[in-house]
Image (cartoon, rainbow, N blue to C red; front, side, top):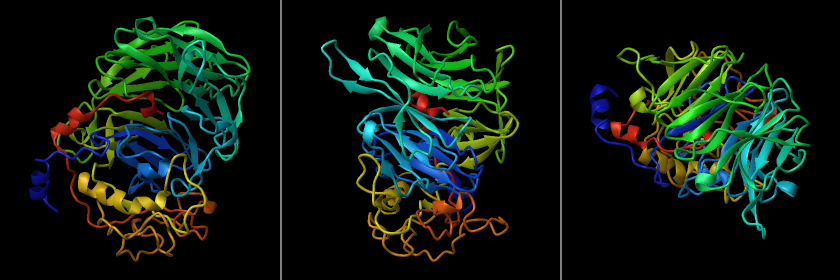
Length: 489
C-alpha cells in the first residue's frame, strides 16, 4: 500500500456520518476482568475488540436502538461478565450478554425510563447501577423521576436502589466509592439559565437518604457538572468536571462540603482518568492536550507525548476521552495526533496507536437464528450490522477488510456462517496473529459465544485483509465537537 497512496488519500477529508458529525471516538470502555476486551464508542457506531486492540469489529448504532440520523451517545459500561450495558437518554436500558450480538430491553420498573448514567461497582463488578432522569408531568412545572437502580447479575435483573432524588433537579452522572460500597454520588444542576446552580448529592446508605451539597458552576460559561471519578482509597475525595469553554476540574476531599479548583482549561474537558492507586490524575481536551496531576499537591502540568511509529518528537494530543486500567492509560484522539485510540504504559509519555480511523476490519460476527429479543427501540440485532451499515462505513471513512456484499447478511441470521463477509471461509480463530497462542474462545468467558464457541451467540470479526492507510485531513481536527461527560470513564 505505499507512501504514494497515503499522500493521495490525505488530500481528502472523511465524509461526515449520517448524523452529520465528523467521525471520532469519544469513549473507551475497558473490561474490569479481561484485559483483551475493549469497546470504543464513536460518532458512527461501536467498535469492540477481543484482542487488546489488535483488531476491531463494527457494531452499528441500529442494534442499540439509535437511528443513524440521531445525534446521541448512549452511556456504556462493561461488567465482570463482559455484558455490555447501554442506556439511552430518551428512554431504555439494554443489555447484551455476548458483548454486542443479542440484546434485551430492561422492563419492569425500568421500562421506558430515560437513562442518565451507568456505573459498574468497582468492589463487585458483576453489579452495575443505573441512574434515571425521566420527565414527568406536574402542576409544579418541569419535574423528573431521578432514581438509582441496581443489578447484581451483569444487568439481567434490576431493582430500585434506595429512594428517588429531588424531582426538581436535573441529574447527570452517578458513581460508587470503591472503598465504601454504600457510598453513592450523583451530580446535578438545579434551575435554568443564569439561575442554574450545581449540586453534588451524596448517600451513605445505598440511596436510602440523600444529602445535597452546592457545587461551583459558572453559568456564563458552564452548562453542567459531571463526576469524573472517586478516589480508589478515599471515599471523601471526588473529582468533577464542568462542561463549557472554559471548563474546570473540581475536587472535594470532604464528600462535597467544600471544593478546590486546581485546573481550568481553555476548551472542553473531554477526558478524565485516575491511576489505579489514585496517585495520578489525568485530564485533557482537544484544545488543551493531556495534563497530568499529582493527588497529594493537586498540581498539574501539560504532557506532550511521543506517538510510537510517528516521525517526530513529542506532540500535544487532541484528547477526546481518557480511560485507565492497571498500568495502562487509554486515550481517544484524532489522526493529526497519530491515532484515534491509543494506549500508554508510562503515564502518557509515549502512546502506541491501537486504532486508526479506517482500522475496522469487519462487522461484528453473529451467528444463530434471529434474536428472540432486541435492544430498546431497535428493529434488529447485531447481525444486521454486517450488511448495509458496514458497507456504508467503508464508503464513508474506510475499513481494513473488504466490504461484504449487500446481501451477505440481514436481520435474520440463519446460515451457519452468518455474519461473515460473503467471501469469508475463515477458521474460528481467523484474524489473530499466528503466534497469538490463544484458545479458540479466548477473550470472553466460555459461555459468551465468542471465537469458535459452540454457544455461538456472537463473536468479534477479525478479518485481516491487507490494511489500507489512515485517511484524514486537518479538517477532521475541526470536527471535534461538544460532548457530554459520557465520553469519560
